[in-house]
Length: 105
Image 1 (cartoon, helix red, strand yellow):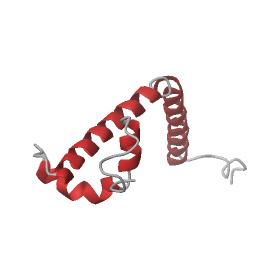
Image 2: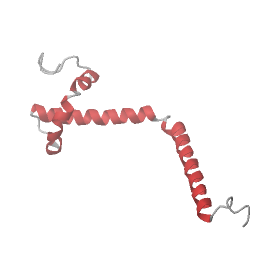
Image 3: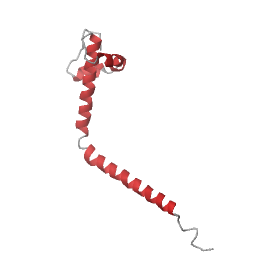
Image 4: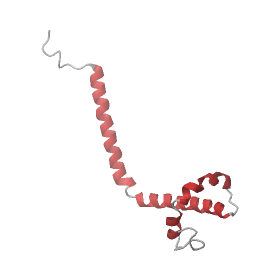
């Protein structure tokens, strides 16, 4: 028996190790990309997401108030989820009170 036999690696072991190294390198590259590019535009992306969320809230609120809504059927079942954050939304829109006193806040 050869003394180096336990040290020798099979082709599968070498391939698995190379794959693991490549995977780690790819993850580091993704992290670097996120740090450089995504962080740079992160506030704009968050603002855009908030604007879309506000638009959805407005559509659902219109439906709740009885105003015809072009996407009423799709938003009707969202009302229970939106009611929870109506207060933050109407304050962000510049209204301290929404509707009659005691109705919302």
